[in-house]
Image (cartoon, rainbow, N blue to C red; front, side):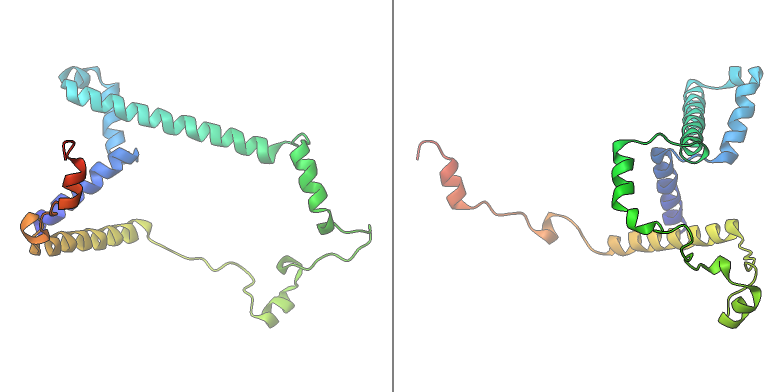
Length: 182
């Protein structure tokens, strides 16, 4: 069972590597290595290649974050120019805007007084939820690893191969069609 857990953990690490997720504990050690010339001289070619990959992933993450921030600033920070698509959308949704200047505002939960909120059973302030993310993540990872290990063990109980599944028999009619001379 312990061996199966190790295999599952290795699979998870390989999958995370393939997806490009970043383990920040390893990144910190890698950055310390990159900043120290002595440690860089002691690294093998494979370790240097891994450090280069890590640096590329970090740079890509930084660039993506920068682009996202710029997009959000453009979207929410400044007034956008009107385009034909925006004008068409405004024309389609014109019915949502009030027709008169002094029209009655639509009610929302934020317009309620404290007394009205209490009558309806709405909390006056958000309830603080304390969640230990690391513990929850570790617990979920443990459950998933156990599930994957159990699945590997159960799959190992049933033979898979030609003897059990059987080899597909050649269809004699298909063989005749393939024969050029007959």
